[in-house]
Length: 413
Image 1: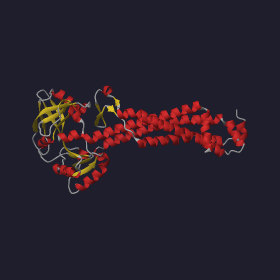
Image 2 (image 1 turned 45 degrees about the vertical axis):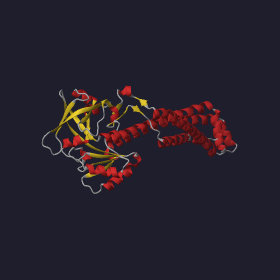
Image 3 (image 1 turned 30 degrees about the horizontal axis):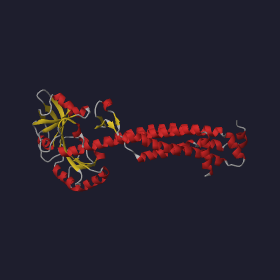
Image 4 (image 1 turned 90 degrees about the vertical axis):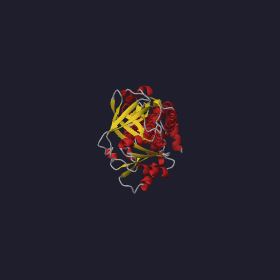
């Protein structure tokens, strides 16, 4: 305790330098926490959007569909799988889906379209596309002729709400083209050009009719109220469907691996930047402790001459670095929480900068209002890291002081 008290008094002797160093540590760590929390919020939004639109917490699909995305690979008893999911997970939302491609024709133009079929009530429960309908209304469960199209697609076709369009395509085992008349029920705008310009949403029954089969789906997706139970739900689903041939049960990580890979890459590159920022702050601490030690060379010589051991003086220097680290880290933690709070509650609004309410990232559409999320684990790891790095920064000054000769040190001017 005496050495700790001595270290604290030494830091207080030059308060201006100590305050500047603490401010540098706190500012650097606060910026690190801000970036961590902003990254965490963006990762959450990407995963949520990917699960809701591209997959589910659990996905059942035909073997080989994950690699080939071949429209001919379908789950042939999709209704039975849907019923199993509904019975086993009564609080979850089950969304069977069909994905086919063809031509959408209007009186003035024909445009290639990716037609997605689903149950309207289920889709509105798991994704927010219904909130992006700018004209008209969302699809209805009892209206298989309704069609929802993107704003870009509506412009290319020259149609509006209430207009008729004809879909044409060749699917399944059919040798001839199949067609169906739709009426535009609504027009959505996400801000992602590809989605707004080439995607249309229809009732599951309509896409099954076009495909020529009544009990098929490319995916049967399970959306859980608690994402943390997805691993257990995947295991339960595999057990429940173990006797069925020709299908595979995937977790969301397996169904959309590109999102996980993108997040991992972004996090790794971010960690490199944050580490560099931490090293810069550490160099500042090294400079502060070293200058403080050099200024007290004569004082250390006197202490050595009256019997203080070199290792005790070295400990004092290390304690000074540790105290700077602890105080700076605590200030940085508080500062990081304070500046992250507005991001968590209100977010950063990039609507005007991006030219829309949404944008595409990692193959999914996310909101242009980027909200953060407090990540206590990573924040604490960087806070502890700051203490460790500042303590390590004091090692060289401590070694330098421990090697001083009492006579030479007292002659130092």
